[in-house]
Image (cartoon, rainbow, N blue to C red; front, top):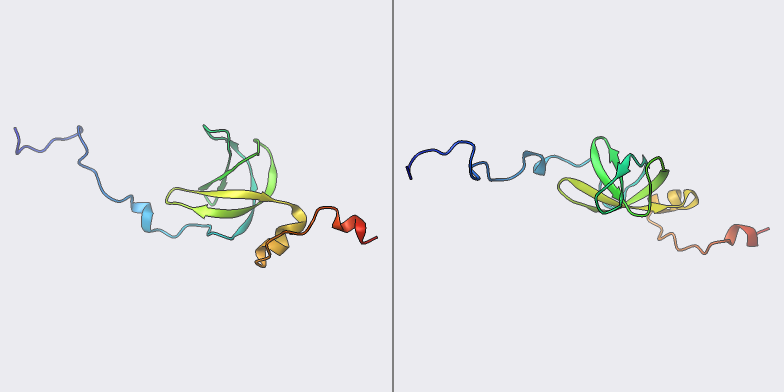
Length: 107
């Protein structure tokens, strides 16, 4: 019995996920427009970019927002919401640390 092939039981199919080496549709620092499609088990918003899952904290299904990717893993990415005004600045590498209300002070 020891030398027999076990089929269906046990972990014979161990190894790397074939998707591990495929390029991801997002990378750290990317700024993307997403629509939150659902809620993950921990309460984060769940969006997809070309089928690749992106988790965004503090969002709810139906939200449409701009997200900056802060971490990319094998099967998913983590993004943070950015305001519409700072999306262009974030894509240019700015830290987005402009104080709120600066537009009203310029008038």
